[in-house]
Length: 421
Ligand SMILES: Nc1ncnc2c1ncn2[C@@H]1O[C@H](COP(=O)(O)O)[C@@H](O)[C@H]1OP(=O)(O)O
Ligand SMILES: [Mg+2]
Ligand SMILES: [Mg+2]
Ligand SMILES: [Mg+2]
Image 1 (cartoon, helix red, strand yellow):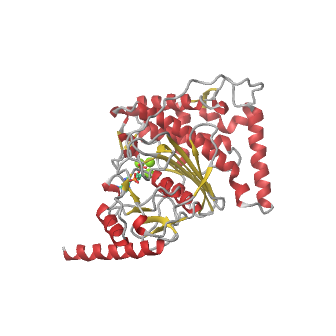
Image 2 (spheres, protein in one colour):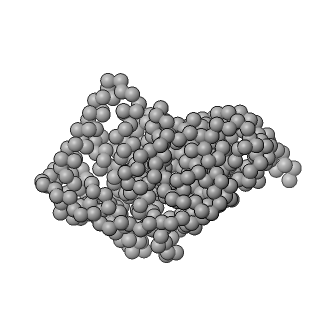
Image 3 (cartoon, rainbow, N blue to C red):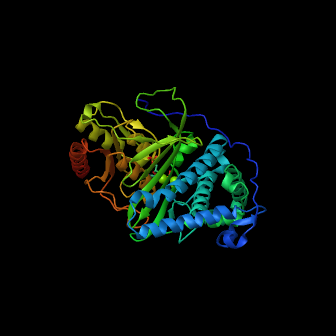
């Protein structure tokens, strides 16, 4: 199996689509979104807005009469797929022309790019427009603080152009032009604290920033929490090959995967290409660790590679680890490309919910299990952070019991050798 998946072709934005004929202006319906616009020569079709509103009202009233979980979240899933796909399009165009000057440094030293902010602005805007009824809450990685500084004027202008260019490729938004203030407020819709009550979107606008900057794997990861549980997730992985990466070395073929899951409805994958159809996916059914291969972070700073090697050795895994960036690992695991995902960050690192929520539901709905190092289910209801024991592991139900034993033994040995030092 490839130890590292290299560069794949990234396409630039397509040509602007022709403007749709829009018969009526209806600013009153748009009033709650008006702050977004500097110019709205032909606003989104009022009919479309009325349709959106009445559809969500239907969903809401249906939810009062014992809906199945699937019908409850279908509209949200469609909006999430649209938002993540558009964000992926923006990221692809930036990755194709990325310049060192696009990288800013934040207090935590993680690189933040125009694509990070642009992706968050697009997802926030599209979700808000598509699901325009009721309160909107989102827990997302980025905020606009750095972007509001005078020194960020140029980068903000670039993000604004990128977002507007990307929106113009979608027929429902081709007449929308967001202002710089609109971009900033869309980004800041992600400052929710989440928690155990109500609905909260959870977004990592680019997961695997380092992979993105290197031209490798990254993901746009979007999930929905309802009463503290992950009920829906979408993972857009623009550089992940559509074919299994299990035996791939170099010639990886077509790339661009969109994974999705609604609780109780299985996990699905489709191409990021417009008009593609989803196919149901499943984790591997292997029960023999010798056949198992495992994924871990490409970045050694993100996971203790020595510990994970020891776990794999104890378990009897023969294949070397597949090191790739981002939640693309959860997607690859969910479709059976590998059998195990191990993530053991360095001491003191606190996992955030946006780094796992979408991957978690995609893997669990594909028949897998995702737990912390003690075998506990992940709890997404505690705010922006995950409270967990040591690390995260994901695999199928057959391998989990022996994986848990190997993990606990390895952690104990690591602690013993640390106490001898
Ligand atoms: N020191 C760190 N340890 C673990 N994870 C980190 C660290 N710094 C950043 N991350 C986050 O880990 C995730 C990627 O992990 P990996 O690619 O190794 O699986 C990303 O969410 C990344 O944030 P970001 O979303 O900013 O890229
Ligand atoms: Mg980051
Ligand atoms: Mg992340
Ligand atoms: Mg990120």
